Amino acid sequence: MADDEIWDVTDVQGTPTGTLHRRGDGPVPEGTFHVVASVCLVSSTGRVLVSRRAAGKDYPLAWEFPAGSALRGESSRTGAVRELAEETGMRLAPDDLVLVGRVIEERALFDLWVAPMRGEPAAVPDPEEVLDAEWVTLDEVRRRWKDGVFATPWNPRFDQLWNVLGEQVAEMARVGR
View 1 (cartoon, one colour):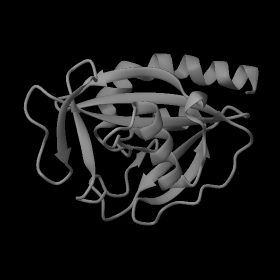
View 2 (cartoon, helix red, strand yellow):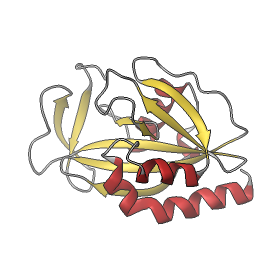
View 3 (cartoon, one colour):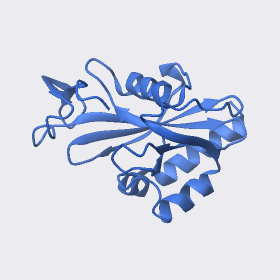
């Protein structure tokens, strides 16, 4: 989460406006957005990978799916794959991702992706970003969300995307991809 990260500023459809924004310079201008992408990895057993934010980050020690801002020139897919690799050491191809949906937030376009993962490999967390990561059931994710231990930005995201997420996780588990 370096202050030298540069983001594309987008319109509400996610189209870059040609303007760049540096993390740490405050929010993007009103009426514009930057893309935030997250990956819900689905193991062949149907469990999903969650990560716990490092103590030095915003929303310290809260749970989430690996996520972060797309950098200048990155699509949501490529940003999601990069963030997943940086935070957990898990590697995917962008084409492995299936879009759950997009949530239009005040200054961000939040995209949630699902992707299959063979087995349940151990995560290798980046200690500056992630304290821990573990494979859990989607019911456990829901319990943590309702218990308030997921990072608070996830509340409206789950409110909007939970049902579709559940369907896509179940389908990936069913086909065992």
